[in-house]
Image 1 (cartoon, rainbow, N blue to C red):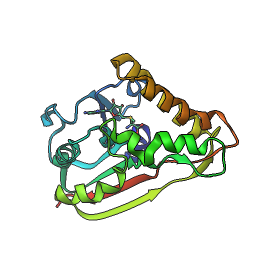
Image 2: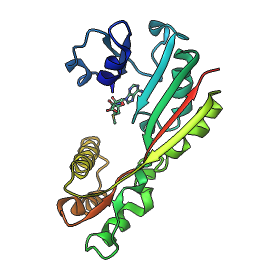
Image 3: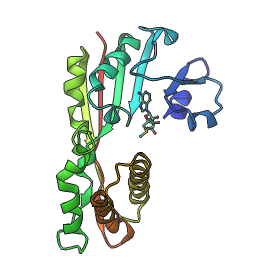
Image 4: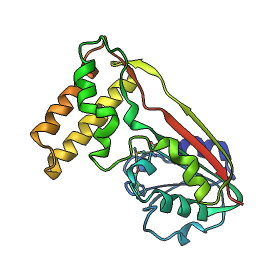
Length: 215
Ligand SMILES: C[S@@+](CC[C@H](N)C(=O)[O-])C[C@H]1O[C@@H](n2cnc3c(N)ncnc32)[C@H](O)[C@@H]1O
């Protein structure tokens, strides 16, 4: 996204890409793209020049900031000039699931997934993405638009492989912090079994895009 934006604004435009962890961003060396380590919840906005941005764009970040999303959005809005746009993309991650009730992995998966309550048990909102317009409105944005899209893919598709890696990453972090109970480990087994079986069709998380304008 940072690279694409830098291409869109042309050589006289300027893009600043921020993240608390800039490991991946640092690999980009593009003249009109600046990379900065920044925590959207707690670091000062002064370094960016609040009220000066034409566009602030976030993707797949707010979901993780449980209970603090509105604060993060307000701070993004603060960076915009009047008339500037905020766009966010975030998922309804609780809706990822095999689609065929006749498939051998379907039942065990859904028992572990509990309609996305698997996320709730970890403190996350399984249906966060659809709430973006409500949060944008509360933060004073206007001219709101919202779209969502999802796909049904084979488990061995690039999306299925990415999802497998994501679950493996979450499991590894639970193992590291000691929250990986025997029951949770069994749930991971049930959730990843369909991902190792290319005969399984899977619905991806609907990814919501919401955009609105600062008055
Ligand atoms: C799922 S990744 C998405 C990365 C990128 N935006 C994209 O779309 O490919 C979530 C990112 O949010 C970053 N992040 C989490 N909390 C943050 C915070 N408080 N401030 C800034 N970045 C944060 C993480 O370091 C991680 O890189």
